[in-house]
Length: 321
Image 1 (spheres, helix red, strand yellow):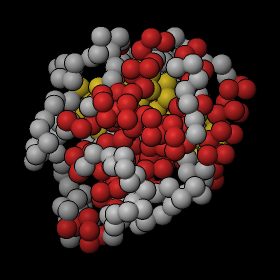
Image 2: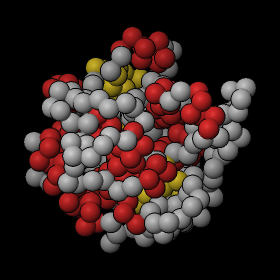
Image 3: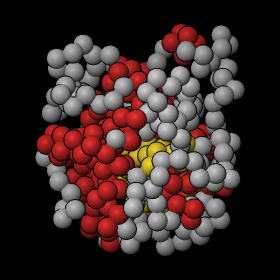
Image 4: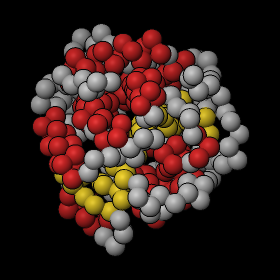
């Protein structure tokens, strides 16, 4: 039975730290992958999981940067991965499966935001290709290990940016409409939320559960494409560069991902959009606040249509899903 999209009053909240969100569980013997797990939210996620005993594999597009960031953290391994390169995704997954037969936790965390128009080798628009299609292909390739774990969880990093718009299934690559960096981000983050619904539907019979996460506002390297004046205009920083008090620390931002990936409160649940270490409330399309989940991001019909499009665009299907 699908999990209801409404808060469960978890007892955690907006200022919960990542390590506290685990709920005291010992993750010894668990194997996790955290994409982008060497900077920002991803690094804090890696630290929390590894600190609780899990072996954490961190795929990295820039291995030198990852090596420096992860130095001294126990239980962490590193491998090369570029989510915009299908061959790189396949190589990473093949290497992982040759060494490890089960995967308990997959956190699809890496992302780009509000970038100028860029395209991958296939001609696909970069935000949709990196944030959604790359993770779709990666999860499909790792599917045998997820099923073998008997209780795996997959976390898909969405964002309040999903409120901007649903995905455009007719023109996902901005071939017929003028490119807008924020529309692109909104489409990709809505796709991330819908992927969790589609994956949970297919995974639940194999005891693989999926969750979408809005981590909250956090100032990280994700904003690298945004000029300072744009951040000021949006109220993210003041004229002196100080970050808005509403923003979370990176550890607080990682907490909901960690909660969804590990906490016993979510046993037997899945297919929901979460924020602030709880299941988010449903809100109408025109909701003005920066909370809750909009209808299109939890629409199972739209999720199935996106799944079909994603299979076609990547050429990848989930093995015996």
